[in-house]
Length: 286
Image 1 (cartoon, rainbow, N blue to C red):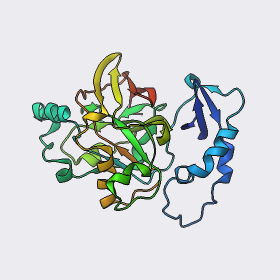
Image 2 (image 1 turned 30 degrees about the vertical axis):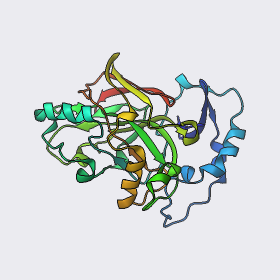
Image 3 (image 1 turned 60 degrees about the horizontal axis):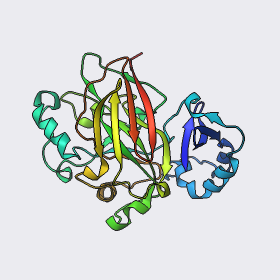
Image 4 (image 1 turned 90 degrees about the vertical axis):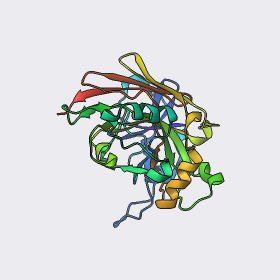
């Protein structure tokens, strides 16, 4: 199943080239309380209960995929987690461009640790990325996004994928500079997830997916998730050693070589096998 949020915060299912509005199933969610229980994103947390109702609600003519604005497929993640330097070829390009990458890429992922992106930076593929600092270099970093489906803390690696709700395309945008990466990657609009979440049961082997990114038609990044240094299971368990992962949390699993600067007017075409594709625009900041 492909699940999305679109237009004016409508919940949808994507089938073929159509989007079906299933927002009425939100009435089935438990009523919110205050202070809120830290249970993660309500839709993702209750997905098993909602799925039959969503399928039943997907009726009528639907809307053409090309005519809707896709928002982030997770409306309220408790956190967005990044995995640094997870492809050997990206480590090599960073080492060769110390003036751009500021020499901070050293040590294993375990030694560096995972990092967090502010929730406020997250947008969907239908929104533009706005360059906050035009005098500085902003780069694209395309990645596989893993969406956590249930609470996870100190879990076994062999069970890790059981905690996944689904997958999406992710862009871990970054402004280059000397600040900590969590700050430079948390700029408004610098986290993109989309165009939808494909549920985990649709992806037999997330560790073997082709992915690519092109800027204005020129391919910049192209690789397979089987080239990751730290696999998906280990990333999930490593994160769950330090954080309690909650439904809707997004792990951006690392980027391959080919990262490059983007400028206003650019259009990035992002594609991951079995998940889908999306075009994301770059604009100047308002």
